[in-house]
View 1 (cartoon, rainbow, N blue to C red):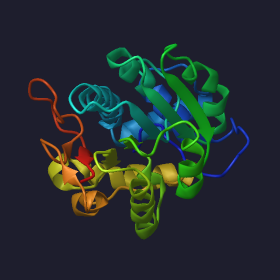
View 2 (cartoon, rainbow, N blue to C red):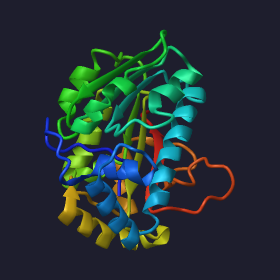
View 3 (cartoon, rainbow, N blue to C red):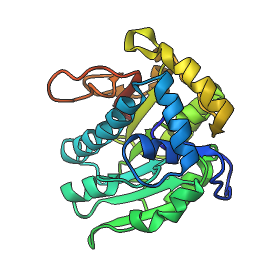
View 4 (cartoon, one colour):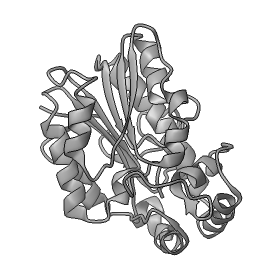
Length: 269
């Protein structure tokens, strides 16, 4: 599925009568920011595709490892987190500013329930900056323009796209969004991305019926993609070790069980 990140609908009003991805994802990872309808749909999807909770946890843990890696080992001090979802423990700004208190983070989402919780996201270190903009992933030019009020696009930026492009159903549009955002940041910037797959080698076949049920009973609609299609989001970039792998296994200690969600970090030459 996704990482609780939702791009759809502009400034949509909060609708508690229909299950919504950010709230269902919050339910799967044990959060409290969800309603009965989210719990019902979440349980139904989990019954069809039990590994979904493992994917949710693995995606969240990938975020933590990736932010630490780019902050500690790549020296990145600016983060553009597109499709942040509901705040939980160890959000991007908390991890980045723990490594470097002067880090600057811009969160992007347009889910009304995320907006309700934006104040939680807006707390950070005195030395750094944590900002939040209400914008749609389908409008990358608006994201770039508004993020540029907080971030310095002459210095490297980590562009975070965790579980967000799976809500852009048109593949060509999804690739264009990545190209547009990466074109706005300088050499040395990074793309940090996760995306669900239906590839059988990662056990992804169950995504297809689960997503069909989701698209008939919840919002926004979602899609999985092949590893080949997901890898193309990194065209023109240099994948960093260990390349594109199950997000549960990316720079993870031990030998975690793979989940059908790819994760990777790549640098712009």
